[in-house]
Length: 409
Image (cartoon, rainbow, N blue to C red; front, side):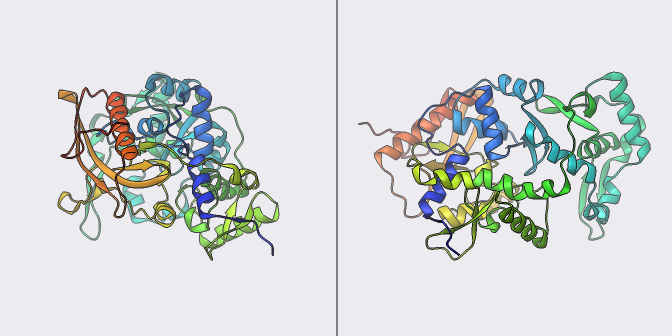
């Protein structure tokens, strides 16, 4: 079979373009349309509560657009409903066009794998508790989890011990009920106050759409993954979206079906023996993409890093989030942010915002082995750090020795 052939460099450029990172030196204003386009192209913005610098979804947008008004983003998502919070990669702000696919997951929740897991018996709550939560939302309107009447039932949370002796925290019943109802599509996150979720009845927030078919739901694993990444082997799509979570057989069925109906094409990548896949429209434009340019910093939860094997295979960059690594075993730092320079991941920084003193500390800068600093890199790096400081409200920047100067000319 005569397959279209592309080069590894074209694959990287398309990936960067789909992620909004191809030309980060060309300033773009974050508008309502730009946010919608970003959600559609990448598949969403991962949410995370860690706030070393700022929330993960705000930093992901900053990496591409520079400074912007966070309140506008919140308004576009929760009031104008350009997106909705649900399970995509992990907890994710998804494009509103994804809602029919989300609806199918809601109908299927909880999956058999949950029901058969030992932890589920500790985490699930009774139908009575769920009904009580729904009644309060119906009568009182949008509420944070802490605003629910709890009384003596708080004792139902606390610490549980597994059969192996490991202890883990279980939230109070109302919090668990809210999570279960959110997954099942009975309640929706309608806003955030200081990052705390505000819940309401889903029927009062979600647009009235029908659930996608199970086939469309399964196909979204491949189609959304290719939309966010461009040309990919199947191994680079696994866990880009963690919903739907398909078996190897189901993934093979999806690929075969999408190739048969023409929505996906097989592609050969020069120098690789692996079978790659692409959307037809991407193949029409891959040869005309610009060279990558500019320097920016990436959040650990950036969609560009959702599939870390892809970063390793294409850019020779090994990355793990060291937040969950014991301090004495960390190599690059608690919130290590990769440095993207001219389309390559060339290093990482260990940043921390000291809010009380309005100071951005960069504790360390680690460059990849074999990467040589240049005047263009130093200037681009310093400008990226200055843009970050401005965005997070720092008036002072502390850099490690050897990084305080800036090359001119």
